[in-house]
Image 1 (cartoon, helix red, strand yellow):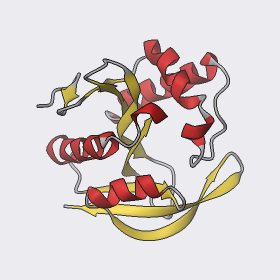
Image 2: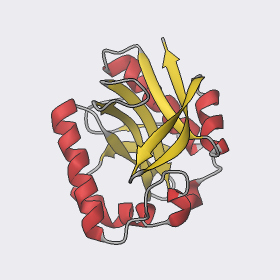
Image 3: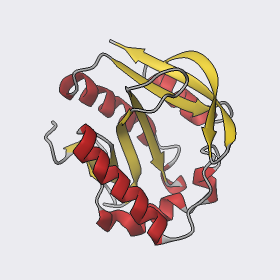
Length: 178
């Protein structure tokens, strides 16, 4: 099912993000609805997206893993990203850990894609990474993401203030061990 350049689920294709994804990623990260629970300001230029994508490409090189493009098979559209990221900075008292996450455009919400993607990346972690724990965060008001994490077996273990852009977001902390 999985190789280094791409893997698929029933309805999704995952592949590494590239700089050529800037236009599609701008559609995602410039949308205030998408950014509502992320504390991020919606991006206002392709240059900001290109910088973000360069950072992801560097993560592939440095850590061997980062978020991947999520493409809907039916339409062939890049709907956002999903995947695992290595976090070296301290977050909620943890350092050097693997975080699972996703971000999709609103027209792809409510179709089970987040759960499908999260389950696929859990399997990826079990089969391809030498780890036995994944972590995740969700804004305390983001009930949809909280439900996805619970469906996928994550356990709520705490609440913490996530600092971003000089302000704190109230987030729940989730863990999955195997």
